[in-house]
Image 1: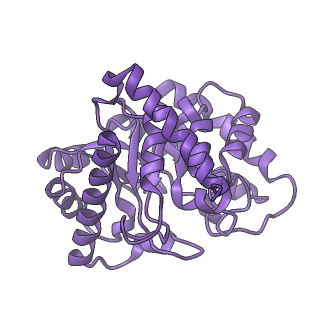
Image 2 (image 1 turned 30 degrees about the horizontal axis):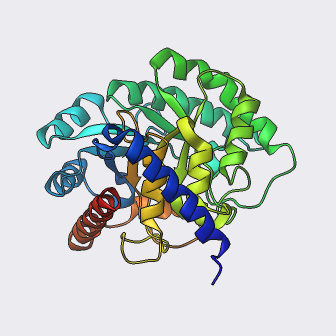
Length: 315
């Protein structure tokens, strides 16, 4: 029986992984850095979230980018103290872009809000030791385009802010999101085109998400290879956007692709973000946390990922 097309692509990645292992086995000695995006924990305190991640042996946390104004969001000193008490470091910040601070908006007040948001979030990212700030070109939860000038407006706004990324040494990680949730930038290729349009050295990286990729890319592993060194962070969940192991995501092929592009190095992270299915995930940040369910979500996902990673490396 002939292989299906996706199986042919799987096999190409498997062979590249084997070639890497045979030619440079030392490049497989370091495991992938795991992180967890905490905004999906809802209104839970940072201390409670940090305690959970510490118990699950998750060394990094991706913080909710909650600086929506000068009087809102995490305090630097308190954040570092809380995370330090639980041995956690910050991988990066999950930038939150809704219709209120939409860089692609046809309303100037919303684009200005996006600039104000970035002016707060970028310095905070640096202050807490984060490597990247996730940037979404258009509002999450708004899949219908305003007009055909969205990408131009968005790129112009981000270009205006890009000097802050270089000034603070933070990577702007553009996130492609499925077309059911946003109106532009759905694939790795889209993100590369958008980055080229911004055309600034402060905007050169990508934040991919396997949940969105299964909808928009022809093959997740191949798309990760195409992202290559531009990939700063990879959001992870199973195919149903739930705990890893509860869906049909091909975790092994994704892990092989990440090792092939040298993702197992400092400053690169696999960040779990299992938010559940739906068209607009942002309401999750306001949910009442269920500690037992969140504990199980974290422990199940981390254990499953590490088990598959060891299986891949031993194969």
